[in-house]
Length: 408
Image (tube, rainbow, N blue to C red; front, side):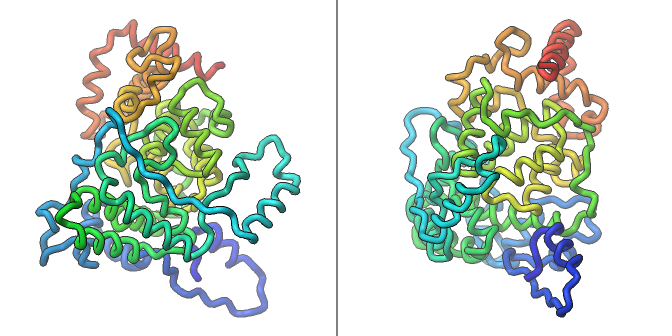
């Protein structure tokens, strides 16, 4: 089968084989490569929302004739609730290792790499499913216990909660144990069976992640040039901080998420985008070093998904080919969408004091460093006006703090 990742395809093509190799079409996506290329051809900008709507129409997902169910295509504004008050969170479905998996664990334990000080993952417990049957059980479990409440808190982050209402299906989709269309159709069928009790925003939000985001990101990977992974629009060159590998940092949000990734190889999309990617962006970390880390650290990490999501969406290193503005934010966003800041030594409301949160001084330093580039982005106009209100002395303090952090 044609590999999803370019490096693997290149490796196979370079093999000096004496037999004929025939590539069959890749079946891990809903849109074929050529279908996306045909859709993208001639467009000035590749807008995901346009692609998502066409996918809904083409595959008749949540449609009433030629109109979307509920009268709207996108219910994203209803899916941004912060985790305030007492939340009753659902359990996740995990598995005990079967004999083959345990054999692999034992083999790795005996390997030289496992005893290397640079080894990353916690090897045990390993609780992911490894078969088609287990992947189907996870899908069924998600639909029965999580899908109806998935929407409102899909962006929320809570200390000690590794999965929230998320489906945990990305590893099974990416490795080919589930097909994305069967997942989308299963969610749609469940909604129609329970439409009197289930809110549409949860189902639409979940379907958009697969039929919209996942398909779009893969299509962009296929469509863009081979030099895409080397893009670095902001010319960020600082090395990746060691704490991305160890989790040893006093910034509680990063500590919590990085520790979780070491334990299970997973974090949900807002943890990835608005904490892990956000910090690297505003701190000026090399996009390529960050993308390499994401690819190595995550159980669903493939070249096609990490390139577009880190180089493009997370780091804006492509200059806006995917995202309409950089996903840069101060500690205020994390404080609003999580409980991480409560138990942190840094103050999420300070930007120049001794205990100011690094997300704050890096955020304003990022805006100041790249003012001339950012002012060309229409969606950054109001944000840059806020920067202009800072006094020269405060801005100098901010920039000094950012510079001192890198020098440590």
